[in-house]
Amino acid sequence: VQLQASGGGSVQAGGSLRLSCAASGRTFENWVMGWFRQAPGKEREFAASITWNLGTTSYADSVKGRFTISRDKARRTVYLQMNSLKPEDTAVYFCAARRTVLSIATMRAESDFSSWGQGTLVTVSS
Image 1 (cartoon, rainbow, N blue to C red):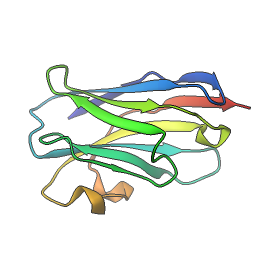
Image 2 (cartoon, one colour):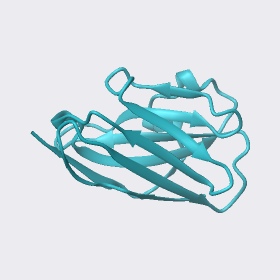
Image 3 (cartoon, one colour):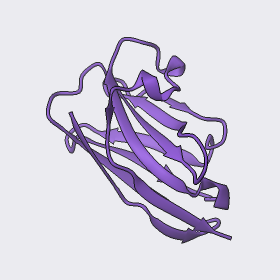
Image 4 (cartoon, rainbow, N blue to C red):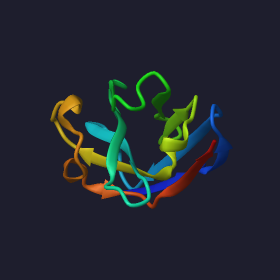
């Protein structure tokens, strides 16, 4: 599985960005796709995830209500729409994936995902 993240950039607080993660290499039925982020000097943390089949979503409390994860099966792409951005959202964002039957709500750790893309930097200025 190859994952290619894009869409990062610099934005002022209150602004919006949309990240994309293009997936290739296989079919993605029964897969969970996720976004993690890593701020400078901090550990990588879960942001959001979505099941490929049904589009069921899960969010970290820190982004709930501001970020929306979605997927386009035809384009084999997962998106992270980020609105009302805050300086504390500044981080390198990574997309991840795993074929699993686990409940999406339990998949919050890096070790829960087996495939990773390169990161894309999001900088939010105050």
